Length: 96
Image (cartoon, rainbow, N blue to C red):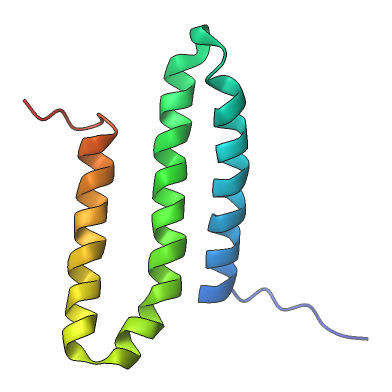
């Protein structure tokens, strides 16, 4: 009989974030058609964007690290730009 491990790995976090982001994308697609739930759609869209960023950033982390220091620095710059883009682009932090 095999024992199940409760260890959380980088791969399992990527899988969970990807799965939840996909579910949220489907829910948002339906909610957008109901005008009264616009605020809910905005919050879910924000969460979806964060989960997608986490999934992609974690998946790309090892790859960027293997490419060398320059690409690893570029990777982190792009991750920071993506976080700023999510925060300012979603309207959670007003520009003015």
